[in-house]
Length: 193
Image 1 (tube, one colour):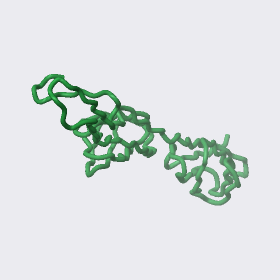
Image 2 (cartoon, helix red, strand yellow):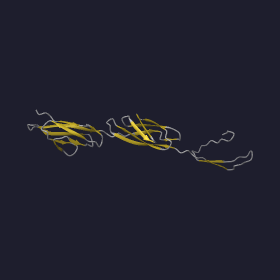
Image 3 (cartoon, helix red, strand yellow):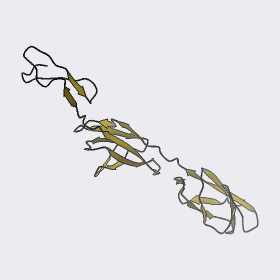
Image 4 (cartoon, one colour):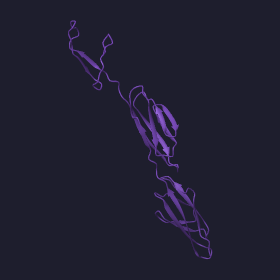
């Protein structure tokens, strides 16, 4: 009974857009490869670039002219989708923590003059609104990246207007304040609210 052909993928697991070579042993040395598109013929090795997981079937003949076949599967791993969570809006002088997920657990964060690496938790204290780029990879080594912007809010400038800048003892005046969130605390020289 003729031995089957042995087809071997140099890289059995690819990232999207990758390629690999199929090497075949056995038979007379002339083969046809089908699967994933146009058939390939010749002595090999054959370069293949599947867009999805594909099983390639190899056919050939023995020295006696008997048909032989074999197969090899090339898996296309998905591209990871990274996610970033945490405080994306802070006050000046404050800090925030961003948590990254979706990859194999080792990430690089760049931005604001920093380059940090870690398992996915990053403490940041940007002085101004900053966009950070986070890169990582899947367990299969497929790379991915995403961005996250930490917004540093502007310090509110309050505008204060007195209805009367000078009053007599016992009289009152109206003070109008604009800017901020609309809740204010007023303190006089004596320290009373």
